[in-house]
Length: 261
Image (cartoon, rainbow, N blue to C red; front, side, top):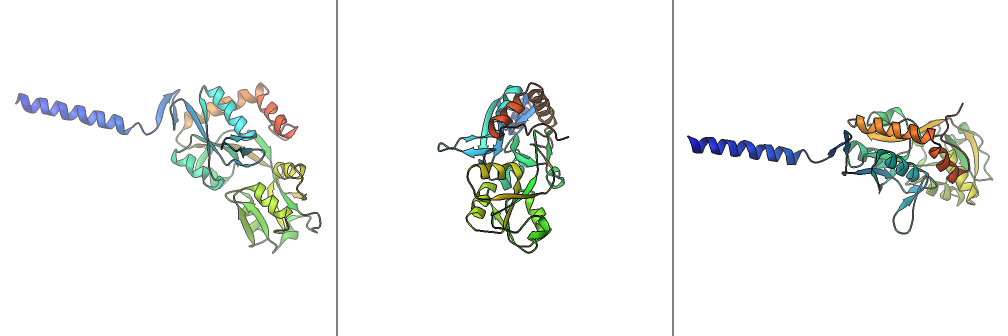
């Protein structure tokens, strides 16, 4: 009887140890936040969206989004841990827990809100039509049936679908704009800040109709409420102490983080 009791106690102990090991897939306890890696704020960006994120020769990403992510990590008391990932798959990576967050210029929209939660916006922008200087296009209706290029996973494809079925997808907005300047496609729809930067870098393109305003925010998994709350607190601090404005002016010469009136 004593042997059976001892064996039973050993079995219960082993089950407890196995359960503890199995629950360690994600690290919690960092102020209640679930993190992909202990002590780190693991965030994804594309590295192909200059000047928001761009990859240097060593594979490291820099840019507006990256600086914002690193400032948020500092406020959270965590080490920034950047991960380069194709834009079209970043939201799914956040949803699955591969990344703690996406700091990749994602526009808040209904489709994405089904998969992830979003922080308060960290900058404001909007889509615009870009064409070559010899184009007669002025507004969206002028593009009916023409070929429009957009980036994969962006919200701009839906806008293009309003006027044409002839849509070409690129891995990045910058690549699409470069193709446009090289006599491919009739237009590109992208963020007006991205287009403005491309023109400033020498691309022979012009901006036409603005197609609205959008809010860009940090995407976080739906079950990670504590992290979402703390990221929002961090963004509010960075807004109040002028850090967001400073980062914006570093890259754009103006403040795109202030809510339009």
